[in-house]
Length: 87
Image 1 (cartoon, rainbow, N blue to C red):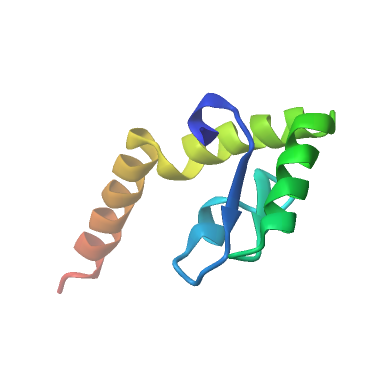
Image 2: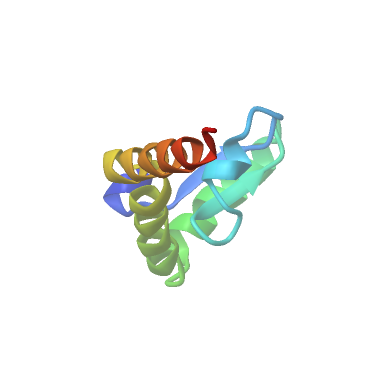
């Protein structure tokens, strides 16, 4: 969804979802097992105009941190650093 520019709603259960989905930047992070919080989050996501910005930022975040090219670039930089450290 983030790659398509859609804000997401995730729950914080200690698995790292908040690393991907930044609360009120790329979507909403809500407490788990809370039906009312889910309902409010869905309502907020559908109603608020600012969510278009959340979607745009979500797409930028995917491209900057989780795309093939960013993955390749980070590995390439790691190899360069390691190679420079060789005796």
